[in-house]
Length: 372
Image (cartoon, rainbow, N blue to C red; front, side):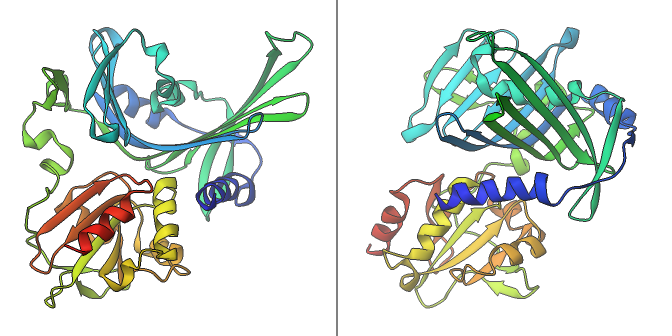
């Protein structure tokens, strides 16, 4: 529940409270449209929060997306979440189940069966036009915001009018972050609010289909491409590996040694602001019902947020010995792009355990490892 409140707070602050709208004026997006048109591939992180008021359900998840352009303006894509992966290359849509440590494979009949595909960055860019838009200020940075509103009669009850309010927001300069907000209203009642945040956007002009990481079916599946085409240039650090770098610069610009010499273990939590599962993990760590604080030194590492953001985020969370932001470049050594990921290290620098994602068993597993 605390994670839900946090996400809703961030969404409302970003779109409702911190936006000061100036008078409408022309917004030139030709450079952005050209960049999109010239790119052979686009990769980004997609955080989606869907609050359905009519049945009190809330969905929040993080997706790593790569979209690659093929012949005749067709596209293929790879979408990765903590539990599932979808891969499409115009021939078939494949679903890979990663949950509960399974690796099951399913062929999906058509893209329309994949609800995640509807809110992708390309569809958002295609919806933009060079009509008049508003310039707004978010956190003292000028953003362009396109808004539109349309309505139609409900198919269930023709007397009801369904209203869609859409907003597309992105910085006036740069292509680092985009946001899409969608509100569905009927008879003055809000049925659903969707917030979509796109970040870590990378337009690849010289990529080719062969250079994109892709997977094929055998008895299970495997990565076929060379190490250079993997995230961070090579595979993630593995259990049993020994880390080669023991010191990093923390959010206060101090050099910190993350490995202890007194046979005490270290736990690094790779996370980022806005991740619901990460927030739940941090809240339960703060409660410390299993007494982990007395057994292990805990560190926070963000692969997305900067020093200032992490310092503000953790100011009321006194549960980490030290924290590291993207400036530390710790993620380049560990290469663990999923949040949260827990990495348990012994006093020799050997990786004892890596746990991706979070559920109620994670802290119990870590506590059990402390006893061995």
